[in-house]
Image (tube, rainbow, N blue to C red; front, side):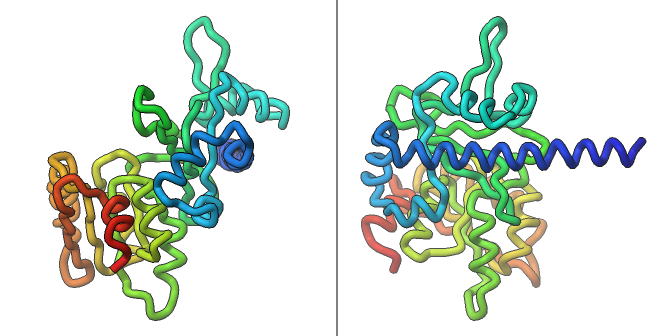
Length: 260
């Protein structure tokens, strides 16, 4: 019975991974469509190039109520799978709806390269929250996942590359830094740094540099990260903090002053 249960759980995980791949293709196609103009304008305003956008698999969730759901249903995915994936939301007495709408979408990729979730940024000032993540699922655990981990592993494996990981607060900070050649850069997914994050970082780096925004929230996040990381510091792991000037974040600073 245990073997059967394990096989069923693994089959569910594989289905969730494939549905995320199909959803990622849908979002990328919408970004290229005329409907994706608001997201393209946002990327242009941040000086993010098409090459960076394509490399990171960025996409656009259209304003339609169930555009993605219709697409996934047409591919044969059941409503149960759509709910389990977190791509659909259910409210009492209402039909299922897309979780992400009118947002820039960033795929969250595990270290093996599979898409396990999405982060989505609002494109209008009145949209709340500013960032919306996939919920916890059998393949996605916020306290363990790091945005940029897959790319970071590839960078760290290159011979002669300094064994350093730069940890920032935002997804688009990671995108901007990587475009300027500052790699590997990673971000926690809107959560405080956890022990699991530190363990994953130690697999790719001997030195972790926390680089948080130059505001009160950024300094508070740095203090929490210090308390979490301190027990892991020692002979094998060096931990540093880079506190940015007031009002700056990694994206704004690298665009204003360049990589150096």
